[in-house]
Length: 226
Image 1 (cartoon, rainbow, N blue to C red):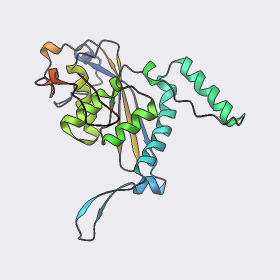
Image 2 (image 1 turned 180 degrees about the horizontal axis):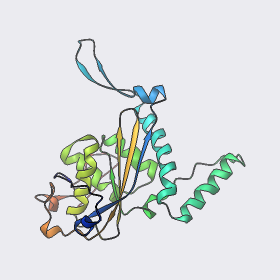
Image 3 (image 1 turned 90 degrees about the vertical axis):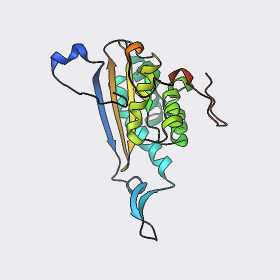
C-alpha cells in the first residue's frame, strides 16, 4: 500500500494481517451540470493534438462539488456535537433566513490523518481553506506534490505512505482519502487503522528520505518547516 501492491480482501481470516479496514466509501458526481462536465475535457487543439483542457471554472466547480460531497459525508463520520451545529446553522439560514455563513464542520474531530488529492498548489490551497485544516493536516499532500508532482488520484496512496513513514498511523486512527476526477467527481475512502504501523520494518517510497521531510515550500502563503 502506497507505492507497492495493495491487497484488498473481504475474507474474515485476513483481518489479523491487515493494516486497515474500509469504513466508508462515497462518490459524488456532478456531471449533469454543463460547467462541471466540461471543466476537465479531453479534446483536440487547432493542431489536432489530443490533450486535456482545463476550464477556468475548474476551481469553482471543485468548490461546489466538495460542498455537496462533505454534506453527504458528514452524517456518516462526524460526532453528534458537529451534526447538531450543522443542523442549527442550516435551520437558521434556510428557515429563519438569517444572513450568516454556512457552518463548516470540524473534520479534525472525525479524522486523524488527511490524504487529499494533489491536483496542484491551488487545489490544495482551496481544500485547506474550505475544510479549515491546518498545515500539519495538509503536510502529507504538500510534501507528495513537492516530491512526486501531480500523480492524480494515486497521490492519496503516496500521502498515506508519508503518514506511515512518519510514524503517524496508530491503532484506531481514522484516515480520510479524498480524490477528484473529471466529470466532475469527488471520491472518498475512510480507513480505520487496525494496528500501529511499525516504521522499522516498513517498506514504502518515502523511507529512503523521510528524515528530510517536511521541507520548506516556496510559497507566500505556506511554509512548512522541519
